[in-house]
Image (cartoon, rainbow, N blue to C red):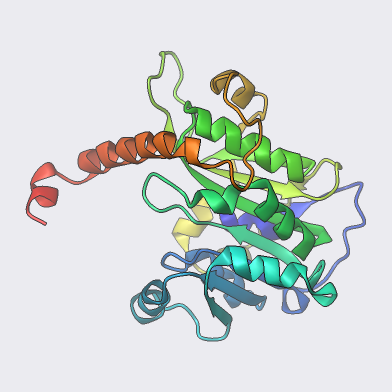
Amino acid sequence: MLEAVRLVECSSCENIVKPDRERQALVIGLGIGTSPSALIAHGIATTIVEIDPVVHQYASQYFHLPPNHISVIRNAVSFVKELQGSAQDGGKYDYIIHDVFTGGAEPIELFTQEFLEGLSYLLNPEGVIAINYGGDLLLESASLVVRTVLSVFPKCRLFREEPAPVGKVLEKDFTNMIMFCRKSKAAFGFRKPVQSDFLGSQARKEVLVPEHEIEAAYFERAGAPGLQPTVLKQGQTARLVGLQQQSALNHWHIMRTVIPSVVWESW
């Protein structure tokens, strides 16, 4: 779904039409490289920022990450801050993908208002950023992240990976949520994909287009109203550690249902 940054369109926007080969993308967090590999396959000049050199090595060696990209092995916070000091890098990227999920928790510093403002600086006026958040949407941390993102990007649309459960009171709601955001307040949608968008992948055909939308107002109800600060700022992240720990425990519980306990216990 992160690759749907290429499908965003806006009827009231300038919508400068450029072929993929003239576009640039910044990817924060590599994983196995599914999304950046797709961007590269479409001809987009892609820069990947990954803190762990082993992650990049394995993505290349075992998951066929194409070599024709710019690799930056370093902390994304310092990298983005460095680019903020360069006027020529302002508005450089057409697409930014922020995907730093690490098994029930995310690096909190990559969700602060200051870091997101840095990404906004690097995104061109007609660009799109997709931010992946994996966690329990009923926890206060999810509400805090959404409020922080909306404090930087004035127009966002939020989508969950699968339909929301209906007809029962939830104690947990663990899922991946993708936030597609732009720098203008204009409404936007997604164009209908064509065959070439799928890159010959049936799996991509099933999941590329965002479907299960969540209204941002949901998080004003879901989060605890007394949680402070109202947005996540540098130097004010320590109080979220407990919430991240709870989210990680929820993720571990899910993984033990996906793979039998005996497998984990024998690892």
